Length: 312
Length: 284
Image: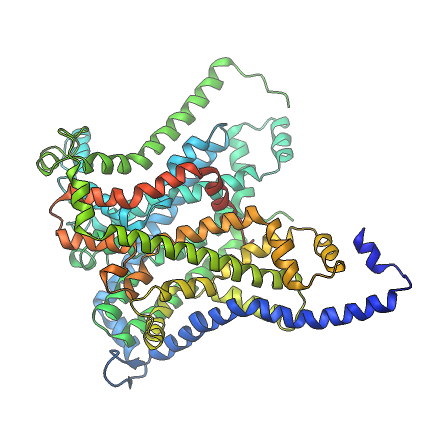
Protein backbone atom coordinates (compact mmCIF):
# COMPACT_ATOMS: atom_id res chain seq x y z
CA UNK A 1 0.00 0.00 0.00
CA UNK A 2 2.66 2.46 1.01
CA UNK A 3 4.85 1.50 -1.96
CA UNK A 4 2.06 2.45 -4.30
CA UNK A 5 1.65 5.69 -2.45
CA UNK A 6 5.25 6.64 -3.15
CA UNK A 7 4.91 6.11 -6.88
CA UNK A 8 1.54 7.79 -7.41
CA UNK A 9 1.53 11.21 -8.96
CA UNK A 10 0.05 13.49 -6.36
CA UNK A 11 0.26 17.24 -6.02
CA UNK A 12 3.10 16.50 -3.64
CA UNK A 13 5.11 14.65 -6.31
CA UNK A 14 7.96 17.15 -6.78
CA UNK A 15 8.45 17.30 -3.04
CA UNK A 16 8.54 13.50 -2.85
CA UNK A 17 11.14 13.40 -5.60
CA UNK A 18 13.27 16.02 -3.92
CA UNK A 19 12.98 13.94 -0.77
CA UNK A 20 14.07 10.92 -2.79
CA UNK A 21 17.24 12.60 -3.95
CA UNK A 22 18.25 13.78 -0.51
CA UNK A 23 17.40 10.35 0.87
CA UNK A 24 19.80 8.75 -1.56
CA UNK A 25 22.44 11.28 -0.69
CA UNK A 26 22.12 10.59 2.99
CA UNK A 27 22.09 6.88 2.21
CA UNK A 28 25.59 7.04 0.79
CA UNK A 29 26.70 8.47 4.07
CA UNK A 30 24.67 6.07 6.21
CA UNK A 31 25.98 3.10 4.29
CA UNK A 32 29.53 3.94 5.16
CA UNK A 33 28.69 4.79 8.74
CA UNK A 34 26.93 1.49 9.30
CA UNK A 35 29.71 -0.51 7.75
CA UNK A 36 32.50 1.33 9.51
CA UNK A 37 32.77 -0.63 12.78
CA UNK A 38 33.13 -3.97 11.01
CA UNK A 39 35.25 -2.32 8.33
CA UNK A 40 37.64 -0.88 10.87
CA UNK A 41 37.84 -4.24 12.59
CA UNK A 42 38.41 -6.07 9.37
CA UNK A 43 41.18 -3.73 8.30
CA UNK A 44 42.83 -3.58 11.68
CA UNK A 45 42.53 -7.18 12.79
CA UNK A 46 42.64 -9.12 9.55
CA UNK A 47 43.96 -7.19 6.57
CA UNK A 48 46.72 -5.35 8.35
CA UNK A 49 47.99 -8.38 10.30
CA UNK A 50 47.73 -10.47 7.17
CA UNK A 51 49.93 -8.05 5.27
CA UNK A 52 52.36 -7.85 8.16
CA UNK A 53 52.38 -11.63 8.41
CA UNK A 54 53.25 -11.94 4.75
CA UNK A 55 56.13 -9.55 5.21
CA UNK A 56 57.29 -11.05 8.49
CA UNK A 57 57.73 -14.43 6.83
CA UNK A 58 60.73 -12.99 5.05
CA UNK A 59 62.36 -11.72 8.21
CA UNK A 60 63.87 -13.04 11.37
CA UNK A 61 62.67 -11.54 14.61
CA UNK A 62 62.24 -12.59 18.21
CA UNK A 63 60.25 -9.60 19.40
CA UNK A 64 63.10 -8.05 21.31
CA UNK A 65 66.25 -7.71 19.26
CA UNK A 66 66.71 -6.26 15.81
CA UNK A 67 64.59 -7.48 12.93
CA UNK A 68 66.69 -8.79 10.05
CA UNK A 69 65.63 -9.58 6.50
CA UNK A 70 66.40 -13.09 5.36
CA UNK A 71 64.51 -13.45 2.11
CA UNK A 72 63.32 -16.98 1.50
CA UNK A 73 65.59 -18.48 4.15
CA UNK A 74 62.67 -19.14 6.53
CA UNK A 75 60.75 -21.05 3.89
CA UNK A 76 63.82 -23.04 2.96
CA UNK A 77 64.54 -23.82 6.60
CA UNK A 78 60.96 -24.89 7.27
CA UNK A 79 60.73 -27.14 4.25
CA UNK A 80 64.05 -28.72 5.15
CA UNK A 81 63.07 -29.24 8.77
CA UNK A 82 62.06 -32.87 9.33
CA UNK A 83 59.87 -31.86 12.27
CA UNK A 84 57.93 -29.41 10.14
CA UNK A 85 57.62 -31.91 7.31
CA UNK A 86 56.36 -34.44 9.84
CA UNK A 87 53.77 -31.93 10.97
CA UNK A 88 52.56 -31.54 7.39
CA UNK A 89 52.25 -35.32 7.06
CA UNK A 90 50.45 -35.57 10.38
CA UNK A 91 48.02 -32.84 9.42
CA UNK A 92 47.24 -34.46 6.08
CA UNK A 93 46.80 -37.90 7.65
CA UNK A 94 44.46 -36.43 10.24
CA UNK A 95 42.37 -34.86 7.51
CA UNK A 96 42.32 -38.08 5.50
CA UNK A 97 41.07 -40.03 8.48
CA UNK A 98 38.70 -37.66 10.24
CA UNK A 99 36.90 -36.12 7.29
CA UNK A 100 35.66 -39.23 5.43
CA UNK A 101 34.98 -41.24 8.58
CA UNK A 102 33.38 -38.35 10.44
CA UNK A 103 31.17 -37.26 7.56
CA UNK A 104 30.13 -40.82 6.68
CA UNK A 105 29.09 -41.49 10.27
CA UNK A 106 27.28 -38.16 10.46
CA UNK A 107 25.44 -38.95 7.26
CA UNK A 108 24.43 -42.36 8.55
CA UNK A 109 23.05 -40.89 11.76
CA UNK A 110 21.33 -38.05 9.93
CA UNK A 111 19.61 -40.46 7.54
CA UNK A 112 18.46 -42.57 10.47
CA UNK A 113 17.14 -39.51 12.29
CA UNK A 114 15.39 -38.26 9.19
CA UNK A 115 13.14 -41.29 9.22
CA UNK A 116 12.11 -40.89 12.81
CA UNK A 117 9.79 -38.70 14.72
CA UNK A 118 10.66 -37.49 18.19
CA UNK A 119 14.30 -37.02 17.44
CA UNK A 120 15.09 -34.16 19.76
CA UNK A 121 16.23 -36.57 22.45
CA UNK A 122 18.82 -38.11 20.18
CA UNK A 123 19.92 -34.74 18.88
CA UNK A 124 20.64 -33.65 22.42
CA UNK A 125 22.93 -36.62 22.88
CA UNK A 126 24.75 -36.15 19.63
CA UNK A 127 25.17 -32.44 20.04
CA UNK A 128 26.49 -32.39 23.59
CA UNK A 129 30.13 -32.95 22.53
CA UNK A 130 29.93 -30.11 20.02
CA UNK A 131 28.84 -27.67 22.68
CA UNK A 132 31.51 -28.37 25.19
CA UNK A 133 34.93 -26.80 25.26
CA UNK A 134 37.55 -28.72 23.33
CA UNK A 135 39.90 -28.39 26.27
CA UNK A 136 37.56 -30.03 28.75
CA UNK A 137 36.73 -32.75 26.24
CA UNK A 138 40.39 -33.45 25.58
CA UNK A 139 41.13 -33.64 29.28
CA UNK A 140 38.43 -36.24 29.76
CA UNK A 141 39.58 -38.25 26.76
CA UNK A 142 43.15 -38.04 27.97
CA UNK A 143 42.05 -40.01 31.01
CA UNK A 144 39.91 -42.41 29.03
CA UNK A 145 42.72 -43.14 26.59
CA UNK A 146 45.33 -43.88 29.22
CA UNK A 147 47.05 -47.23 28.73
CA UNK A 148 45.44 -48.46 31.93
CA UNK A 149 42.24 -46.50 31.34
CA UNK A 150 38.63 -47.58 30.80
CA UNK A 151 38.81 -47.83 27.02
CA UNK A 152 41.62 -50.36 27.13
CA UNK A 153 39.92 -52.20 29.97
CA UNK A 154 36.82 -52.60 27.85
CA UNK A 155 38.98 -53.45 24.86
CA UNK A 156 40.73 -56.31 26.62
CA UNK A 157 37.47 -57.61 28.01
CA UNK A 158 35.95 -57.75 24.55
CA UNK A 159 38.94 -58.76 22.45
CA UNK A 160 41.10 -60.58 24.96
CA UNK A 161 44.25 -58.70 24.05
CA UNK A 162 45.46 -55.53 25.77
CA UNK A 163 44.63 -52.28 24.06
CA UNK A 164 47.35 -50.06 22.59
CA UNK A 165 49.05 -47.26 24.45
CA UNK A 166 47.01 -44.60 22.71
CA UNK A 167 48.95 -41.63 23.95
CA UNK A 168 52.38 -43.14 24.42
CA UNK A 169 52.86 -45.19 21.29
CA UNK A 170 53.83 -43.06 18.28
CA UNK A 171 51.82 -45.33 16.00
CA UNK A 172 48.59 -44.69 17.79
CA UNK A 173 48.61 -41.08 18.87
CA UNK A 174 47.15 -39.80 15.61
CA UNK A 175 44.43 -42.41 15.91
CA UNK A 176 43.70 -41.09 19.39
CA UNK A 177 43.49 -37.51 18.13
CA UNK A 178 41.23 -38.69 15.30
CA UNK A 179 38.89 -40.42 17.70
CA UNK A 180 38.48 -37.30 19.80
CA UNK A 181 38.09 -35.07 16.75
CA UNK A 182 35.46 -37.25 15.10
CA UNK A 183 33.60 -37.70 18.36
CA UNK A 184 33.43 -33.99 19.08
CA UNK A 185 32.27 -32.82 15.64
CA UNK A 186 29.86 -35.60 14.74
CA UNK A 187 26.80 -33.85 16.09
CA UNK A 188 27.40 -30.65 14.17
CA UNK A 189 27.45 -32.42 10.83
CA UNK A 190 24.47 -34.54 11.83
CA UNK A 191 22.44 -31.41 12.30
CA UNK A 192 23.58 -29.88 9.03
CA UNK A 193 22.89 -33.06 7.05
CA UNK A 194 19.55 -33.49 8.76
CA UNK A 195 18.54 -29.98 7.77
CA UNK A 196 19.60 -30.77 4.23
CA UNK A 197 17.65 -34.02 4.13
CA UNK A 198 14.55 -32.32 5.42
CA UNK A 199 14.86 -29.70 2.75
CA UNK A 200 14.43 -32.27 0.01
CA UNK A 201 11.22 -31.67 -1.87
CA UNK A 202 8.70 -34.26 -0.67
CA UNK A 203 7.11 -34.36 -4.13
CA UNK A 204 10.29 -35.82 -5.54
CA UNK A 205 10.31 -38.53 -2.90
CA UNK A 206 6.63 -39.18 -3.46
CA UNK A 207 7.21 -39.56 -7.19
CA UNK A 208 9.96 -42.04 -6.52
CA UNK A 209 7.77 -44.01 -4.18
CA UNK A 210 4.97 -44.11 -6.73
CA UNK A 211 7.43 -45.34 -9.32
CA UNK A 212 8.20 -48.23 -7.02
CA UNK A 213 11.62 -47.26 -5.75
CA UNK A 214 12.56 -48.96 -2.49
CA UNK A 215 14.35 -47.32 0.40
CA UNK A 216 17.85 -48.12 -0.78
CA UNK A 217 17.20 -47.03 -4.35
CA UNK A 218 15.66 -43.79 -3.15
CA UNK A 219 18.68 -43.15 -1.02
CA UNK A 220 21.27 -43.71 -3.71
CA UNK A 221 19.49 -42.19 -6.68
CA UNK A 222 17.60 -39.32 -5.11
CA UNK A 223 18.44 -38.37 -1.55
CA UNK A 224 22.22 -38.48 -1.76
CA UNK A 225 22.54 -36.65 -5.07
CA UNK A 226 20.18 -33.96 -3.83
CA UNK A 227 22.16 -33.73 -0.63
CA UNK A 228 25.50 -33.51 -2.40
CA UNK A 229 25.80 -29.71 -2.31
CA UNK A 230 25.48 -29.82 1.47
CA UNK A 231 27.89 -32.74 1.75
CA UNK A 232 30.34 -30.86 -0.42
CA UNK A 233 30.07 -27.73 1.68
CA UNK A 234 30.58 -29.74 4.85
CA UNK A 235 33.57 -31.52 3.34
CA UNK A 236 35.31 -28.28 2.46
CA UNK A 237 34.67 -26.85 5.91
CA UNK A 238 35.73 -30.08 7.62
CA UNK A 239 39.00 -30.25 5.71
CA UNK A 240 39.85 -26.63 6.51
CA UNK A 241 38.95 -27.19 10.10
CA UNK A 242 41.06 -30.33 10.40
CA UNK A 243 44.05 -28.48 8.98
CA UNK A 244 43.74 -26.21 12.00
CA UNK A 245 43.81 -28.96 14.62
CA UNK A 246 45.48 -27.63 17.72
CA UNK A 247 43.47 -27.77 20.92
CA UNK A 248 43.21 -31.55 21.06
CA UNK A 249 46.90 -32.05 20.37
CA UNK A 250 47.83 -29.39 22.93
CA UNK A 251 46.01 -31.20 25.70
CA UNK A 252 46.47 -34.84 24.73
CA UNK A 253 50.19 -34.62 24.14
CA UNK A 254 53.19 -32.95 25.63
CA UNK A 255 55.02 -31.22 22.85
CA UNK A 256 53.35 -32.85 19.92
CA UNK A 257 53.41 -36.46 20.99
CA UNK A 258 56.16 -39.10 21.15
CA UNK A 259 58.45 -38.64 18.15
CA UNK A 260 56.33 -35.68 17.06
CA UNK A 261 53.79 -38.23 15.93
CA UNK A 262 50.86 -35.90 16.55
CA UNK A 263 52.43 -32.56 15.90
CA UNK A 264 50.19 -30.62 13.56
CA UNK A 265 51.11 -27.58 11.49
CA UNK A 266 49.29 -25.21 13.81
CA UNK A 267 51.01 -26.77 16.80
CA UNK A 268 54.30 -26.18 15.03
CA UNK A 269 53.37 -22.55 14.42
CA UNK A 270 52.44 -22.10 18.06
CA UNK A 271 55.63 -23.78 19.21
CA UNK A 272 57.93 -21.81 16.93
CA UNK A 273 56.21 -18.51 17.47
CA UNK A 274 55.22 -18.48 21.09
CA UNK A 275 57.51 -20.94 22.77
CA UNK A 276 60.70 -20.27 20.85
CA UNK A 277 59.85 -16.73 19.77
CA UNK A 278 60.89 -17.29 16.18
CA UNK A 279 58.29 -14.96 14.74
CA UNK A 280 59.69 -15.04 11.23
CA UNK A 281 59.73 -18.82 11.05
CA UNK A 282 56.25 -19.08 12.50
CA UNK A 283 54.96 -16.63 9.91
CA UNK A 284 56.58 -18.58 7.13
CA UNK A 285 55.02 -21.77 8.44
CA UNK A 286 51.61 -20.12 8.54
CA UNK A 287 51.99 -18.99 4.92
CA UNK A 288 52.80 -22.56 3.96
CA UNK A 289 49.65 -23.65 5.79
CA UNK A 290 47.63 -21.03 3.93
CA UNK A 291 48.95 -22.18 0.57
CA UNK A 292 48.25 -25.79 1.44
CA UNK A 293 44.70 -24.92 2.45
CA UNK A 294 44.09 -22.94 -0.72
CA UNK A 295 45.43 -25.71 -2.94
CA UNK A 296 43.36 -28.40 -1.28
CA UNK A 297 40.24 -26.24 -1.37
CA UNK A 298 40.82 -25.47 -5.04
CA UNK A 299 41.14 -29.18 -5.79
CA UNK A 300 37.87 -29.84 -4.02
CA UNK A 301 36.16 -27.06 -5.93
CA UNK A 302 37.41 -28.66 -9.12
CA UNK A 303 36.01 -32.04 -8.09
CA UNK A 304 32.71 -30.35 -7.41
CA UNK A 305 31.83 -30.38 -11.05
CA UNK A 306 32.09 -34.15 -11.22
CA UNK A 307 30.44 -35.14 -8.00
CA UNK A 308 28.02 -32.49 -6.95
CA UNK A 309 24.54 -32.19 -8.42
CA UNK A 310 22.96 -28.79 -8.33
CA UNK A 311 19.30 -28.43 -9.07
CA UNK A 312 18.78 -26.09 -11.99
CA UNK B 1 -0.64 -39.23 2.31
CA UNK B 2 -1.47 -42.90 2.05
CA UNK B 3 0.78 -45.39 3.62
CA UNK B 4 1.97 -48.14 1.36
CA UNK B 5 0.89 -51.49 2.71
CA UNK B 6 3.75 -53.40 4.20
CA UNK B 7 3.86 -56.64 6.12
CA UNK B 8 3.68 -55.78 9.82
CA UNK B 9 6.97 -57.41 10.67
CA UNK B 10 9.19 -55.42 8.36
CA UNK B 11 7.96 -52.02 9.52
CA UNK B 12 8.76 -52.83 13.11
CA UNK B 13 12.14 -54.26 12.21
CA UNK B 14 13.43 -51.25 10.33
CA UNK B 15 12.23 -48.88 13.05
CA UNK B 16 13.89 -50.99 15.71
CA UNK B 17 17.14 -51.19 13.79
CA UNK B 18 17.21 -47.43 13.46
CA UNK B 19 16.63 -46.92 17.14
CA UNK B 20 19.32 -49.41 17.98
CA UNK B 21 21.82 -47.67 15.77
CA UNK B 22 20.94 -44.26 17.15
CA UNK B 23 20.94 -45.47 20.72
CA UNK B 24 24.36 -47.07 20.44
CA UNK B 25 25.73 -43.98 18.77
CA UNK B 26 24.07 -41.75 21.30
CA UNK B 27 25.53 -43.73 24.14
CA UNK B 28 29.00 -43.42 22.65
CA UNK B 29 28.46 -39.68 22.45
CA UNK B 30 27.65 -39.24 26.12
CA UNK B 31 29.70 -42.07 27.59
CA UNK B 32 32.76 -39.85 28.15
CA UNK B 33 30.62 -37.33 30.02
CA UNK B 34 29.12 -40.03 32.20
CA UNK B 35 32.54 -41.46 32.90
CA UNK B 36 33.82 -37.99 33.75
CA UNK B 37 31.02 -37.45 36.26
CA UNK B 38 31.43 -40.85 37.86
CA UNK B 39 35.19 -40.54 38.10
CA UNK B 40 34.97 -37.09 39.61
CA UNK B 41 33.33 -38.64 42.65
CA UNK B 42 35.81 -41.45 43.06
CA UNK B 43 38.97 -41.48 45.09
CA UNK B 44 42.30 -42.05 43.45
CA UNK B 45 42.97 -45.62 44.63
CA UNK B 46 39.64 -46.72 43.25
CA UNK B 47 40.33 -45.23 39.84
CA UNK B 48 43.68 -46.89 39.52
CA UNK B 49 42.44 -50.28 40.56
CA UNK B 50 39.23 -50.34 38.59
CA UNK B 51 38.90 -47.65 35.93
CA UNK B 52 35.97 -49.30 34.24
CA UNK B 53 34.12 -49.78 37.48
CA UNK B 54 30.83 -47.99 37.49
CA UNK B 55 29.88 -46.64 40.82
CA UNK B 56 32.06 -44.59 43.09
CA UNK B 57 32.57 -46.36 46.34
CA UNK B 58 32.61 -44.38 48.50
CA UNK B 59 31.31 -41.15 47.00
CA UNK B 60 34.07 -38.62 47.37
CA UNK B 61 32.87 -35.05 47.10
CA UNK B 62 36.19 -33.67 48.20
CA UNK B 63 37.53 -33.68 44.65
CA UNK B 64 35.31 -30.77 43.74
CA UNK B 65 36.52 -28.76 46.69
CA UNK B 66 40.10 -29.61 45.77
CA UNK B 67 39.54 -28.57 42.19
CA UNK B 68 37.83 -25.33 43.11
CA UNK B 69 40.56 -24.43 45.55
CA UNK B 70 43.45 -25.41 43.32
CA UNK B 71 42.70 -22.82 40.68
CA UNK B 72 40.73 -19.55 40.59
CA UNK B 73 37.62 -20.99 38.97
CA UNK B 74 35.30 -18.37 40.33
CA UNK B 75 37.38 -15.63 38.76
CA UNK B 76 37.74 -17.53 35.51
CA UNK B 77 33.98 -18.01 35.35
CA UNK B 78 33.40 -14.34 35.88
CA UNK B 79 35.95 -13.55 33.15
CA UNK B 80 34.40 -15.96 30.67
CA UNK B 81 30.87 -14.78 31.37
CA UNK B 82 31.45 -11.08 31.03
CA UNK B 83 33.64 -11.53 27.96
CA UNK B 84 30.82 -13.57 26.41
CA UNK B 85 28.16 -11.04 27.24
CA UNK B 86 30.12 -8.07 25.94
CA UNK B 87 31.14 -9.94 22.81
CA UNK B 88 27.59 -10.96 22.02
CA UNK B 89 26.12 -7.53 22.66
CA UNK B 90 28.79 -5.76 20.67
CA UNK B 91 28.67 -8.22 17.78
CA UNK B 92 24.91 -7.97 17.47
CA UNK B 93 25.11 -4.21 17.15
CA UNK B 94 28.04 -3.94 14.74
CA UNK B 95 27.05 -6.92 12.62
CA UNK B 96 23.46 -5.70 12.29
CA UNK B 97 24.64 -2.29 11.23
CA UNK B 98 26.92 -3.64 8.53
CA UNK B 99 24.38 -6.27 7.48
CA UNK B 100 21.67 -3.65 7.10
CA UNK B 101 23.93 -1.50 5.00
CA UNK B 102 24.75 -4.39 2.68
CA UNK B 103 21.19 -5.61 2.54
CA UNK B 104 19.25 -2.41 2.05
CA UNK B 105 21.41 0.61 1.41
CA UNK B 106 22.92 1.51 -1.92
CA UNK B 107 26.18 3.25 -1.36
CA UNK B 108 29.37 3.66 -3.25
CA UNK B 109 31.73 0.74 -2.86
CA UNK B 110 29.23 -1.57 -1.21
CA UNK B 111 29.86 -4.39 -3.64
CA UNK B 112 33.61 -4.13 -3.33
CA UNK B 113 33.45 -4.04 0.44
CA UNK B 114 31.15 -7.05 0.51
CA UNK B 115 33.56 -9.09 -1.58
CA UNK B 116 36.35 -7.97 0.72
CA UNK B 117 34.37 -9.25 3.70
CA UNK B 118 33.94 -12.56 1.92
CA UNK B 119 37.66 -12.80 1.31
CA UNK B 120 38.67 -12.10 4.88
CA UNK B 121 36.58 -15.05 6.00
CA UNK B 122 39.15 -17.22 4.33
CA UNK B 123 42.21 -15.88 6.09
CA UNK B 124 43.15 -18.44 8.73
CA UNK B 125 43.80 -17.23 12.23
CA UNK B 126 47.30 -18.64 12.24
CA UNK B 127 48.60 -16.25 9.59
CA UNK B 128 47.43 -13.22 11.52
CA UNK B 129 48.17 -14.39 15.03
CA UNK B 130 51.79 -13.32 15.26
CA UNK B 131 51.24 -9.82 13.82
CA UNK B 132 48.08 -9.56 15.93
CA UNK B 133 50.16 -10.21 18.99
CA UNK B 134 52.51 -7.46 17.92
CA UNK B 135 49.58 -5.08 17.44
CA UNK B 136 48.14 -5.98 20.82
CA UNK B 137 51.53 -5.44 22.31
CA UNK B 138 51.77 -1.94 20.83
CA UNK B 139 48.25 -1.13 22.04
CA UNK B 140 48.98 -2.41 25.52
CA UNK B 141 46.27 -5.01 25.21
CA UNK B 142 48.40 -8.03 26.03
CA UNK B 143 47.17 -9.84 29.11
CA UNK B 144 43.91 -7.87 29.05
CA UNK B 145 40.47 -8.88 27.90
CA UNK B 146 40.32 -6.05 25.37
CA UNK B 147 42.35 -8.21 23.02
CA UNK B 148 39.65 -10.85 23.22
CA UNK B 149 36.57 -8.68 23.03
CA UNK B 150 37.34 -5.86 20.61
CA UNK B 151 38.53 -7.92 17.63
CA UNK B 152 35.65 -10.34 18.11
CA UNK B 153 33.12 -7.50 18.16
CA UNK B 154 34.59 -5.47 15.34
CA UNK B 155 35.46 -8.29 13.00
CA UNK B 156 32.93 -11.04 12.40
CA UNK B 157 32.12 -11.40 8.69
CA UNK B 158 30.18 -14.55 9.37
CA UNK B 159 27.80 -12.67 11.66
CA UNK B 160 27.40 -9.96 9.04
CA UNK B 161 26.43 -12.53 6.40
CA UNK B 162 24.00 -14.26 8.69
CA UNK B 163 22.18 -11.09 9.75
CA UNK B 164 22.13 -9.93 6.14
CA UNK B 165 20.23 -13.07 5.22
CA UNK B 166 17.74 -12.42 8.00
CA UNK B 167 17.20 -8.81 6.96
CA UNK B 168 16.70 -9.74 3.35
CA UNK B 169 13.88 -12.01 4.33
CA UNK B 170 11.92 -9.05 5.73
CA UNK B 171 9.42 -7.24 3.50
CA UNK B 172 10.73 -3.90 2.31
CA UNK B 173 7.32 -2.33 2.87
CA UNK B 174 8.01 -2.31 6.57
CA UNK B 175 10.88 0.10 6.14
CA UNK B 176 9.17 2.14 3.46
CA UNK B 177 6.28 2.76 5.79
CA UNK B 178 8.65 3.93 8.48
CA UNK B 179 10.44 6.12 6.01
CA UNK B 180 7.25 7.82 4.98
CA UNK B 181 6.58 8.45 8.62
CA UNK B 182 9.79 10.46 8.65
CA UNK B 183 12.19 7.94 10.16
CA UNK B 184 15.82 8.07 9.13
CA UNK B 185 18.05 5.04 8.52
CA UNK B 186 19.24 4.89 12.11
CA UNK B 187 15.70 4.79 13.48
CA UNK B 188 14.65 2.26 10.85
CA UNK B 189 17.46 -0.11 11.70
CA UNK B 190 17.13 -0.05 15.45
CA UNK B 191 13.40 0.46 15.89
CA UNK B 192 11.98 -1.47 12.94
CA UNK B 193 14.39 -3.94 11.41
CA UNK B 194 16.15 -5.37 14.42
CA UNK B 195 13.05 -6.08 16.49
CA UNK B 196 11.73 -8.01 13.52
CA UNK B 197 14.68 -10.34 13.22
CA UNK B 198 14.80 -11.22 16.92
CA UNK B 199 14.77 -15.03 16.38
CA UNK B 200 17.67 -14.70 13.97
CA UNK B 201 19.57 -12.45 16.35
CA UNK B 202 18.95 -14.95 19.13
CA UNK B 203 20.41 -17.69 16.96
CA UNK B 204 23.43 -15.55 16.22
CA UNK B 205 23.87 -14.76 19.90
CA UNK B 206 24.07 -18.42 20.72
CA UNK B 207 26.64 -19.13 18.05
CA UNK B 208 28.75 -16.14 19.06
CA UNK B 209 28.48 -16.93 22.76
CA UNK B 210 29.54 -20.51 22.17
CA UNK B 211 32.52 -19.38 20.14
CA UNK B 212 33.58 -16.81 22.69
CA UNK B 213 33.22 -19.22 25.62
CA UNK B 214 35.14 -22.10 24.04
CA UNK B 215 37.80 -19.93 22.44
CA UNK B 216 41.22 -21.24 23.40
CA UNK B 217 43.94 -20.28 20.95
CA UNK B 218 43.70 -16.51 21.25
CA UNK B 219 43.40 -16.43 25.04
CA UNK B 220 46.32 -18.85 25.23
CA UNK B 221 48.50 -16.46 23.26
CA UNK B 222 47.31 -13.23 24.76
CA UNK B 223 46.74 -13.89 28.46
CA UNK B 224 49.57 -14.44 30.90
CA UNK B 225 48.27 -13.84 34.38
CA UNK B 226 46.17 -16.54 35.93
CA UNK B 227 43.59 -14.11 37.23
CA UNK B 228 42.83 -13.05 33.67
CA UNK B 229 42.25 -16.56 32.44
CA UNK B 230 39.04 -17.79 30.89
CA UNK B 231 37.63 -21.13 31.91
CA UNK B 232 39.11 -23.25 29.08
CA UNK B 233 42.50 -21.68 29.55
CA UNK B 234 42.46 -22.25 33.29
CA UNK B 235 41.45 -25.84 32.76
CA UNK B 236 44.33 -26.45 30.37
CA UNK B 237 46.82 -25.18 32.91
CA UNK B 238 45.34 -27.56 35.41
CA UNK B 239 47.06 -30.63 34.07
CA UNK B 240 50.42 -28.93 34.31
CA UNK B 241 49.89 -28.07 37.94
CA UNK B 242 48.80 -31.52 38.88
CA UNK B 243 51.20 -33.27 36.55
CA UNK B 244 48.54 -35.82 35.78
CA UNK B 245 48.53 -37.24 39.29
CA UNK B 246 45.12 -36.91 40.78
CA UNK B 247 42.84 -37.84 37.93
CA UNK B 248 39.65 -37.58 39.86
CA UNK B 249 40.37 -33.98 40.75
CA UNK B 250 41.07 -33.24 37.08
CA UNK B 251 37.74 -34.81 36.23
CA UNK B 252 36.07 -32.70 38.87
CA UNK B 253 37.67 -29.62 37.34
CA UNK B 254 36.43 -30.63 33.91
CA UNK B 255 32.98 -31.20 35.31
CA UNK B 256 33.02 -27.74 36.87
CA UNK B 257 33.84 -26.33 33.44
CA UNK B 258 31.35 -28.35 31.45
CA UNK B 259 28.28 -28.84 33.57
CA UNK B 260 26.95 -25.25 33.50
CA UNK B 261 27.18 -25.26 29.71
CA UNK B 262 25.39 -28.60 29.54
CA UNK B 263 22.63 -27.39 31.82
CA UNK B 264 22.17 -24.27 29.72
CA UNK B 265 22.09 -26.52 26.69
CA UNK B 266 19.41 -28.75 28.17
CA UNK B 267 17.27 -25.72 28.93
CA UNK B 268 17.60 -23.95 25.62
CA UNK B 269 18.25 -26.93 23.39
CA UNK B 270 15.64 -26.36 20.76
CA UNK B 271 16.79 -22.84 20.11
CA UNK B 272 20.45 -23.87 20.09
CA UNK B 273 19.91 -26.73 17.67
CA UNK B 274 17.92 -24.53 15.34
CA UNK B 275 20.54 -21.82 15.35
CA UNK B 276 23.37 -24.22 14.65
CA UNK B 277 21.44 -25.63 11.70
CA UNK B 278 20.71 -22.15 10.47
CA UNK B 279 24.30 -21.04 10.72
CA UNK B 280 25.55 -24.20 9.07
CA UNK B 281 23.36 -23.49 6.11
CA UNK B 282 23.67 -19.75 6.35
CA UNK B 283 25.78 -17.86 3.91
CA UNK B 284 24.50 -19.90 0.99
